[in-house]
Image 1 (spheres, rainbow, N blue to C red):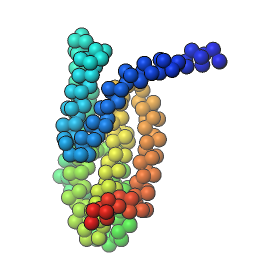
Image 2 (image 1 turned 60 degrees about the vertical axis):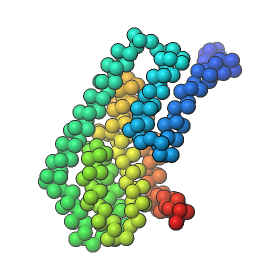
Image 3 (image 1 turned 30 degrees about the horizontal axis):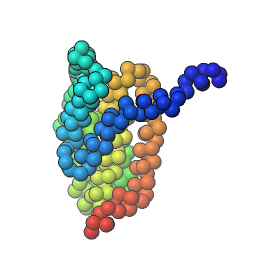
Image 4 (image 1 turned 180 degrees about the vertical axis):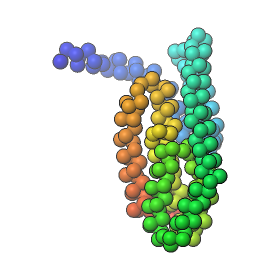
Length: 231
């Protein structure tokens, strides 16, 4: 309906007013990401800086929140953090079980005994990481697989930087892949929506990451161009 569309449309004055309110919050991503990439602070420190700046903007500058809002915010934070810690704890325990039973070591030994080529090994690694990403937390996957894969990639003549980029993209995919996709649970805790809706929203990003992974695999230069420039 035209009348309904007219109600939803905003005037330029309203748009400008909304933009002025959003200017300060929009400075947070460049500060956080820029600080990480320039080495000013670590990702962990960036989280604290982002939270501190958000508190300053909302409570002091814009005064959109007051003291009465602090307790509900802390309660929501505790709920979300507890949920994530439980997921991480169970995932780390599961990873410990795999390590004790030497399942990753046996898999790596089998790969070496099979005499796989470089490309066959990389395809196998991608399939394995995608599978592990469905059930394990990222830190557990890294602790289990990297010490095993690294000697193999050196033996096969695989560039470690290229392999690291492939590994990172796999871990990004793992963070949005159910059932242990931590980012999915964070979104679910913040947005207060259904699990199905979160999964539907994450699906296009899964496709994009899969395409990026395929391009990096086919064209290693996309991941190694900076190394070539530096050298």
